[in-house]
Image (cartoon, rainbow, N blue to C red):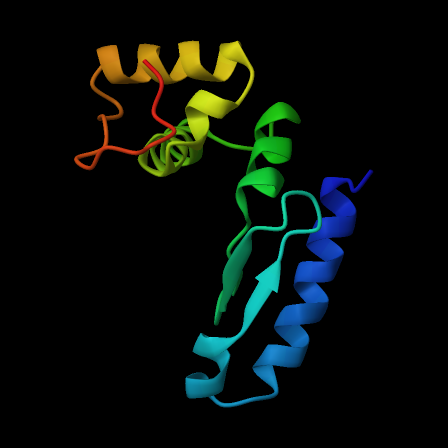
Length: 113
């Protein structure tokens, strides 16, 4: 199983390779999360973590409140939140009820409420 440290190391290596190229090429580079196989972009500030890496960071207490809300909003927008274990869906509903998150404007086939 991949841990957050291994994922960050892979991200750092990808960023080093990407920073050797110009900005146009950098924007087109994508990295695949080894856990969920999600394809996500490399940026000049580093690799944007895929959902799995961010969920691991959440579980390890490494995300602050704003980062947690941002993660939950992204999971809600993608529809993936409803595919995760129940506690994530319940937390998402709590964030929505509190006004921290909103339901997506588009209907996802995987949306289960």
